[in-house]
Image (cartoon, rainbow, N blue to C red; front, side, top):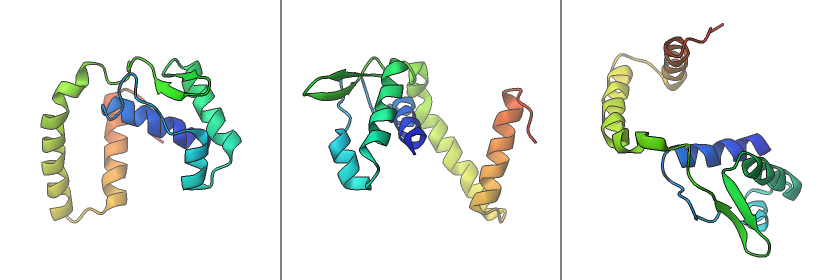
Length: 118
């Protein structure tokens, strides 16, 4: 479960939804909204801190450090998203469902990045 929190924060950073100085919800707030164990949330925040993505201020909360995950790609997001939406429309018209689309995208990403796919 803590890995899901870590991945969600990293995804938000990559998409530019979080920026340097933004405050993450407190452990207590996350627990209240999700019923996740507080130790799990704290573990996720510690991992993010260890990765240099967040920093804690005692008594104040956890804040986003410099956003190194978004890099320069944010300027291209709008155009790429537009192209992706058009591609998804084509895939749906071709009769592909969500699982087939995700499988095709996953396989293609792994091939392009030179990874082996089972």
